[in-house]
Each structure stands twice: as C-alpha cells, then as structure tokens.
Length: 329
Ligand code: SF4
Image (cartoon, rainbow, N blue to C red; front, side, top):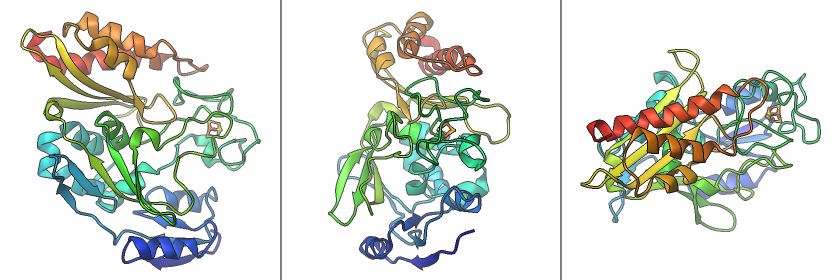
C-alpha cells in the first residue's frame, strides 16, 4: 500500500480545510470500499481525512421529511423508526445491501460514493478505462454477466453497486454538499454521471466537496413501498437486478402516483421515469405493470452474457408492483 497521511476532522469546515491541504486527498467514511481499493492499488490517495466524527443524526425536517447526517451508519439508518415506518423501501434496501458487520461500519456518505464492483476494475492486469483512461475495457468483450444494460457506453459498461442509492433516487433525495466554494444541494439523481467517454469521472462533485447530509423529502405514499433484490446467492452479493417502488392507488384502483427505480442495470441508480409515466392513470394490473416495465427497458442494450437481465428486470418490476397493489390487481 502506498504511504499516506491520516487526520481526523472534528467538523465539516475542518475536514474541508484538511483535505484542501493535499492534492488528491480523500475523505474516509467507514472505509468498507475505499480501504479495499487502496489495498488493491486501485486508489492511492496521499492523504486521508477521517469524517466519521461528523454529523450522524437522523432528524425530522420541518416539511415532514428526514435529514440524515452523512456520517450516520447504514445500521443506524436501517433501524431508525421513522425510516422503517415512513420509508420502508429505504430500510429494506440497506438491509439487502450488506452484512451486519459492514452496515455497522459503512456510512451514508460513503455509500453514495462507493465504486463499481466490476472485476476488471479491481484487476490491475486488466484494461479498464475507469481506472486508466484510454486503456480500453476488458469487460465489454469479456465476462460481462453482471454489467449494465442501460446507460452504458463504448468506454464502460460497469454498474453502480449501491442498494441504498436506488431507494433514495426513488424518493427524490437531495444531497447536501459543502466545499471550498461553499455549500449547495444537489438532487441525488444528478450526483452520479453516465460514463460517456470519461468513465473515470463518476460524480458531479467539485474538487474538495464533502457530502454532509442526505435529505429525504416527505412522501406520504412511501409507507406503501418495497425493495426487492435479485442476486446470485442467498447470502450477500451485489444485485443482478433490484427494484425500489412506492405505489399510490386511487379508490377505483388506478395508479394515482408511483415511484420506481432500478439497481444492478446501469452505471448509476436508475430512476425508471418511462415506467412511472406509463403507469400513472392506469389500472393496477399485471398487464399494465408489464407494459410499464417494457417501456423502461425498451432502450436496454445487453452484452454477450447479460441479456437475461432484461426479462429479469421486467419480471421483478411486475412482481414488486403486484405485491404492493395486493388484492387490488
Ligand atoms: Fe473498467 Fe468500466 Fe470496463 Fe469495468 S466496464 S473494465 S470499470 S471500463
């Protein structure tokens, strides 16, 4: 491992100041991904600024939503009563995401910034445009069963690994940022970039910016929500496909509103806008759920090994929505 300095920040301004002192410095949350990347030599930050001592409270916002300190652990968020009662898809996504030990360490801010689990990205002997821009992509013609079917590019076909982010994107979460140029807020849906020709540029964060909190706006019908993750084994694994959904049905059984997002299929947590638009005003039937899924997956571009994800995603969307609709289907 390359030598690096380590400092612990007491608050956000101190963290930003410490990070600004060294070019290439990184903020360190629970380290459940960054430390792995450093061990593998994929990341070589000259300085780490530990931000686990920063704001970790999960608080009710004046508008009825939640503000979650970026240093809150995944365990604390999944166990929070307001999250479990009002945003069950978020609690379930976190519980599906990792073992208890990892959830105890991993922070909310770190979860947002975890990097792809593409095996070629971690293998320094492989060609990878994300790790070494311009090198090529060994996944494109290699073993690409776990890779993206939506939003990928010639340069990179990796998927975003987070479960929590899929639920948060469905909930229209906002990311609170602070940095050398001041504080700002960004919709989580705009935090992660599609790869295009620069897969090494993964987020819209400005140099030195720190995630300080995540805001979840109020959404009454999120109480009727779910998260389902399909993976290769019953024990913890990254998603082949996952679905976060919340459903609002009118008295006559039509879909008044819906939130839908997918994991395991794209380079960023994938908000299923086309499916949502296709569902609003329709009957809550298996047929309309299927049509909505097909609308979302119309642009899917499978690779050699992952064509099965298209049907898997469609069936998972239908199953989750039918389950939420209950006997109204
Ligand atoms: Fe690298 Fe992306 Fe290709 Fe994986 S898919 S090898 S992360 S460029």
